[in-house]
Length: 420
Image (cartoon, rainbow, N blue to C red; front, side):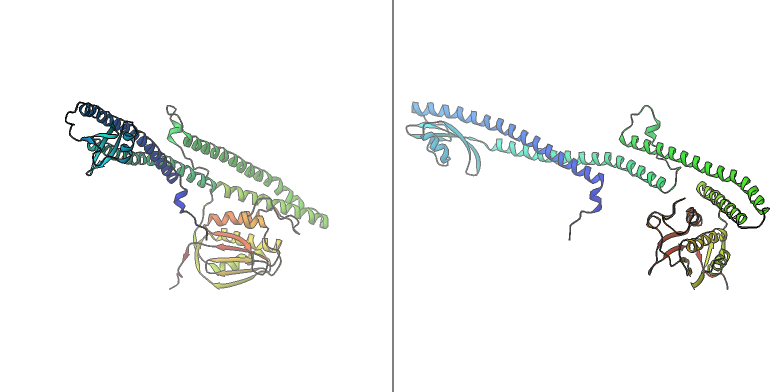
């Protein structure tokens, strides 16, 4: 099993915190090492000079036959072997070693083939270096903690603004074209915009442009549909005056198709505008579905497994069901079965099923499956989806088990049986 890090480790706050900690630790380690090395060098150098100065006085006293200073002698006990060997070899040197548990600076010089050595107390210097190391570690930890807090505060402010921008982007993607980030930094010309402000401003500009284009297309669609209504009404009246025959029937059929297309465009325009008003009322779902299927005028089997009462808009629900049933008969094969199981209404045919693009992305206007045996404008299912959204219902399209297309409509607002 492949190990995966928790989801929170992928956040910008976590990554920034790790980066700040690593950089602060690295900087503290480098600066601490430099300070430690330099202070230790100076401290050791001072103790060495003191020891060598005392060794010079000791050597003079030895040559003059005077008593040696305290802590001095020929090959004294505790003298580091390396320093003894250096003095016997004819050279002078110093070394730090423990003497009776106390840090001591030794200095030795050759004297008649032996080592003349003296000592200087090094404990205070050692304490100074240890105290400095503790101070460096403590100040480094404090600096890292403060830097981490300040950095986390700054990064959190940035990530909060990024989350707000992402939330607005999701709202726009869901169809709320009025959503805006409206970053106050973008409105104040005295403040220089940062990268987040630039992204937020670009998102607001994109949303405004997209909204303007969509509104323009909606107005164009509505205007065209309205303008077509009048000549189509006259054309329909004129077609009724033509003598009966096959040419007349073809003209009347085309006129009916054009009128239906115009009405569909007007309905889509109203749905796009978001101004539809829902007339809520309490209905028993089973009889309502049966009435909608009968109104379609097509042979359709209705099966009520479990009936419920729902609060919905009867006209819009009948419109959704009528379009689903008409699409099943037009693009599928019989038998077409409508099943009511509680608040869920399913419409199934036994044809070749829905196109892949429709199952994946939903119906698209004026797009139908290539090579289909029947023609259409792709507006029926688009209207069904739009009306379902208006009444708060969910509508999904998928393939049915054993073949065929299956549309599942899930209604909200289920209420208890009002009868006593």
